[in-house]
Image 1: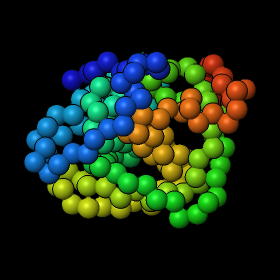
Image 2 (image 1 turned 60 degrees about the vertical axis):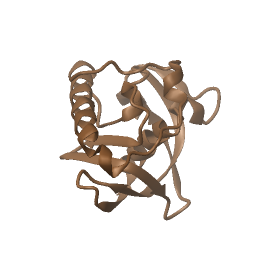
Image 3 (image 1 turned 30 degrees about the vertical axis):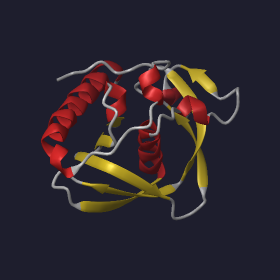
Length: 164
């Protein structure tokens, strides 16, 4: 079901989310379906959207959904950074369409998580996928890209393709 995406300024976006438990797997299926439907609708309207975090639809739980080449669910994710190497990127967000924020992110990350079968998994991400998962992970801790801006001149309004 398509849900409303919470927008910048909504106090629910600034909450630290709680973990899921194995006994919540049935509930997780519904949330994942809602995240998928909501993201696909956003993509239809705005032509962008590769991942979404549960708190963006008002679910204060540690759950990320990514659809790049295939659907990927990250339950109770934990991030590790194998290097200190960083990159500067223009970050956009479904919670503030049209606003771009210049932020610094790690070039690589390792995400540990539970999958939909409650099996522990790990994925090593680089470049734009590393940036994407860091952005989504921040949502789980109530952190928005606007809070990670490099400086007060790091905000841009418009299409991200104009700034790449």
